[in-house]
Amino acid sequence: MIFTRMLSRRWILTTLLVIAAVVVMIRLGFWQLDRLEQRRAFNARVQAQLNMPPLELNGAALQADLHNMEYRDVIVRGEYDHSQEIAIRNQAMDGQWGVHLVTPLVIEGTERAILVDRGWIPAEDYTSGDWSKYAEPGVVEVRGVIRRSQSRPDFGPRSDPTPVPGGEPVKSWNFVNVEAIDQQVSYDLLPAYIQQAPSPSWTGLPARTAPQLNLTEGSHLGYALQWFAFAAILGIGYPFFIQRQEKSAGSKVDPAQKNGRANQHASVSKDMDLSIRRKS
Image (tube, rainbow, N blue to C red):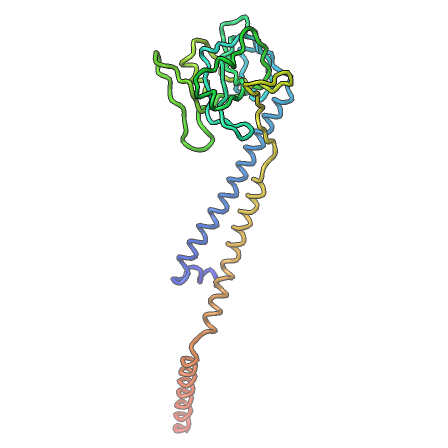
C-alpha cells in the first residue's frame, strides 16, 4: 500500500515535511479569506459613510460617535489656535518632501476643539520652525472628512513620544494621535480629527489633500485559491511521486546482482531435479 510506503523509514521524514507544508498552505489560504472579509467589511463601512450627508459639527453632533463615522463629510465653523499647532512628519507631495500642519480648531459657540489636518507644506518651511505665514486668522468654515485617531503604523514599531505634563509640547509627530496630543493642548479635544478637503477657491499652502481610498477587494481571493491549489497539488501528487520513485528504484537493480540471483535459482532447481531422479 502507498500509505505504508509513505511511513517507511525511507520516506517518513519527507512525508512529515510534506504534511507540514500542506497545513501551512491551507492556513495561508484561510488567512487570505479572513483578509478578504476584513476588506469587505471596511469597504462597506466606508461606503456607508460616503453616502451620508455632511455632518454639521455643532450642538448635539458634538456628542456623536465620530470614531465610527470615519470618512463621512463634515462641516464645522470655528477659530484656529496656531499657538498649539503641530506637524506630521514624512509627508510627500508631487515628489517633494514636507509635513502636514495639524491645528486645533475651537468650535464656534463652544469651548471644545477638534484637530484639523490643514494640509502640506515643504520641508524647508517646517525646519525653520516659523509656520506663522500659514496662519488662517479669524472665524473659518472647514469642510473635510472625519478621520480616526492613529497611535501606531499598520506595519513596524514606529511610534510617537508621550508628552510630559508640564513639559515642552511635542511639535513633530508621526501620526495624528488625538489621545496623546490631547495631553498637551489646553482644550478638550474631540476623539477624531478632520482632514480638510481640497477646494477650487484655495490654491495656496498648506495644500489640502484628500484620503486615498481603495474600495476594491484586492487580490485576496486569488491568493487564497492559489494557496489551496498548491496544497492540493502537493498533497495529491506526493503519493504518486513516491510510487514512481519506488518503481524507478526497482528497475535499476545491478545486472550482476540480477544474474547472480538467476544462477542461484537455476542451481537450486538443478539440485532438486537430481535429487528427484536418484529417488526414482
